[in-house]
Image 1 (cartoon, rainbow, N blue to C red):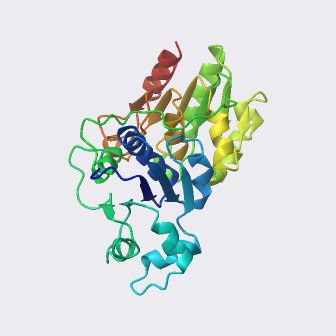
Image 2 (cartoon, rainbow, N blue to C red; image 1 turned 180 degrees about the vertical axis):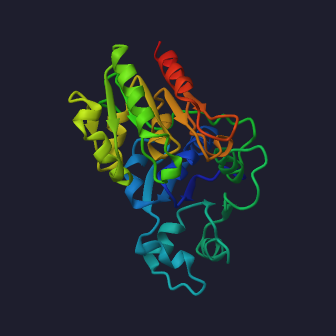
Length: 300
């Protein structure tokens, strides 16, 4: 980054995976610019997780009323907002800014260097979303992105954690296959836990049926991202679909096995030091046997 700013405001709206895919780039920035203060404006729901990133000094609600003037073509900012923004030497926009209102307002209110752009604009040619975010941050192509970026003491306690859900139903490996995985892992002597999030409520009848799953199944429904992080952290293995919890497991440094169906892992794979991705060469889901053998192999 030009000029090594002493303070940087990062604007990153979007889902949990979108936020976590940018953290390796921010960790690189912190390591390459010693003493830099990084603050992130993101979805309010995920702000507590940023407290687990040692290189993030502060966070703000991207949708909060105090930031609304940033996106107006005719802004009427209060003196407090201008005072806060003037404390930043640089701003990194990982977002669409079609009329450049945000970039123009930031410069007008004292931010000297504004960089970034819409990470979803244009074609992906041999690069991942994490790599594109790093490029927009001005990082060298040599910057390593497979990093653990969140730190917490968790309750996974060496369990195999399975998340069979995803925000989009088309991104879910069949629940019957996940049940077989849970049962085989348990028979191999490993403790297991199944996590379902707020977007997975339609899967509850399947996993709450004791006739199908057995009475010993440990089924958890973390309500908040921090609770989810604590449940995942410390796991011996996490297995899930292309979804926010898989990105969270990877960011926590947990051994992570991610199953891809219609989405492209070359673009959307989670980033972490211990991530394995499975996808069929026929652009469909990996086979049950491949998933089972890979999971047991990672545990062994």
